[in-house]
Length: 274
Image (cartoon, rainbow, N blue to C red; front, side, top):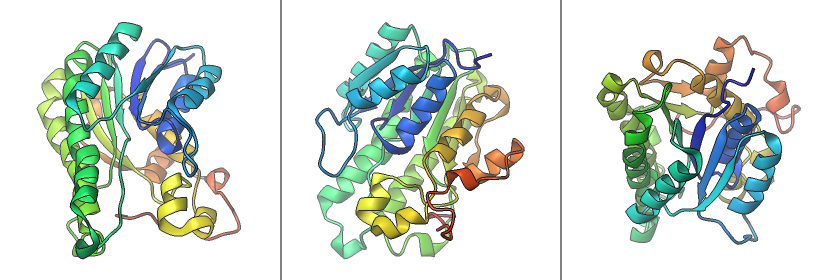
């Protein structure tokens, strides 16, 4: 039985990494997937485009796939993506706010354009993408919003090294905090998910620590499997949570996580904010 058969899922930032892994996992279980991302031309340092991701997702399951070029900093781009998804699939049951920008710079080295990019995508984009989907989520049988953002922790050590980035990711988490309560009357779940360890993505490879850190990371599939188990839960009974991938899987009886390690012989590196 495919739990997500005929479910319509909109995933931002799904051309690569965690977003694509979640899309593939849900597609394998029958979901229709709309890929909302910016990349339409191959990039020398970033693998994948909305079209290459769509090919993979199309092969993964029986559902439909819709690649959409979207820049979530702009309302018209968001609105168009939502309307195209509804037109193609008939509605929206699940929104995954995965698209994110990162710059781990201290305050003096954070230029306005970096600040604007992170807050434009992480906070503003997440807020207005959620806003645009709410009317359709209200019509769904088991509607979920899932943000890829960390637990809120006011320990100054998470702010000092990269204040602008932390504020932007916590902004995504605050969206969950607010929407979970606001949308309870409509039985729309709003939750956040964050990895316990670093995940082998382009951001880790290009911005954080190159191959050394990649070898101490897990694959995006651990986050995708955790997302799968969250999204299958009843929306009215599962909202306002800040999940960690390991803990979600443990609750499902999955404790052997060795298959997710990029290099099982290397000690894993904890992610930021945990």
